[in-house]
Image 1 (tube, one colour):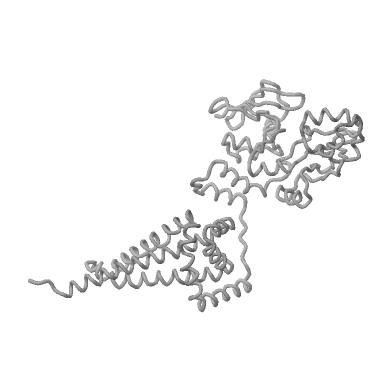
Image 2: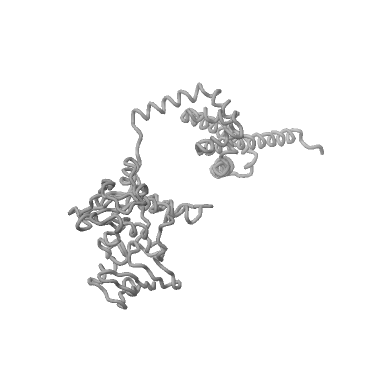
Length: 428
């Protein structure tokens, strides 16, 4: 018996319909990837495209000059393709799920299948590819996208105007995130190929605006300064020995800062036996302890300054802070030819460390993976590990004394006058 000719026609329609869905999904994928690729281009990326292909670079720059119109074009085109996929799929699904008796079950299966295909092949995969190959993808789509942007102008331009009008009418809603929320977001982020140093920089940027000067400054006791009554012959060996480029100058005591000596100002007079160096002292820049680092960084940029004297609430000198100290909060330690090679800590084994007493608590948490919240209630105003030991002990500990906190053992290895120099930490 010969096959029914209508079955051939039905199979042919099913094949054509499936091919149509595949083509529409590819078009939808291209538009989804385009949105990610185009809007993730940086100025450096555009410069690179201009060098490789000036025509495409010019087209992409022209498109990005009107981002709202471009976005409207991409969204309209993508929705057209997605809507066509849905309509065509439901026209063919009657044959695909012909054996399913329940209309509710059939409808559920249709929704599940079309949603899965559109999300996976039309959204997730193309956006993932485009985000990792934004330059190549943008160059590939430049001409078609420019043509679409012109053809759909009768629709995209009104949409852009409506969007601008709504923004003016209701205003742009600003979302404020706390530092804790941003930190949690970073912890949940998949860094992919990011290095450990890049992750530290991201964490530094997040905490930067919530850090004040007191947490970062060089404390009063560690300040190297010159007495204004000293002669040129007396200060010269000290300057060479320390290697600092900017040095505070005081009279009587460190609380009476008269200004800052820029060592480069001494270069024209370096061959002189005697020189009235006090004449070239520059005015000092004073900041309070509670000033935030981001604010101070802006002031440094405006004033073209690199050093500030930190004062307490009584006007006394609390410490000093440099531009390098601020930048180190973001990028980590910056070493130059004058940096001391003092070891801030050494790892004895997995559970034992030897720390310098002046190491900041933030660095201590980072090195030992300690839970910061456990220390917050007990640290008081302490910013260093030595200060923390003083807080929890209630007195000045002696060499060899062991102090327990949350099961961890802090052993005082070295003290100097009224200062804790070295601490052995045993983590339990």
